[in-house]
Length: 102
Image 1 (cartoon, rainbow, N blue to C red):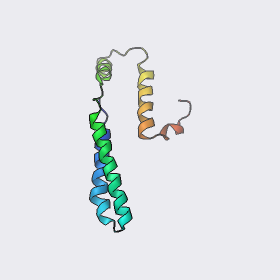
Image 2 (tube, rainbow, N blue to C red):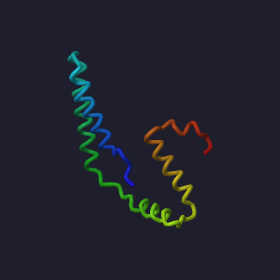
Image 3 (tube, one colour):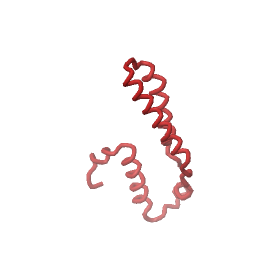
Image 4 (tube, rainbow, N blue to C red):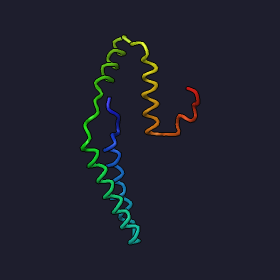
């Protein structure tokens, strides 16, 4: 149940956009230099991400299989809500502000 897009896929998409669409339009030497620095930094981030161990989602896969089989352990709803909230805090930090107390 790996999340898509992955952090590396996101960084790659940003890198492709900046290098392929934004950089060619920059005529200002200072802005072009700063864009090249930013692209280099993004490359460093991607290489650092590549060194991280892959996420172990075996526990989530097992839970999903149990739910599909009709075996829903106690506390599953709370666990799933917490995991979704955690993902939302990463993907869209202010989204949950709309739903206080839930």
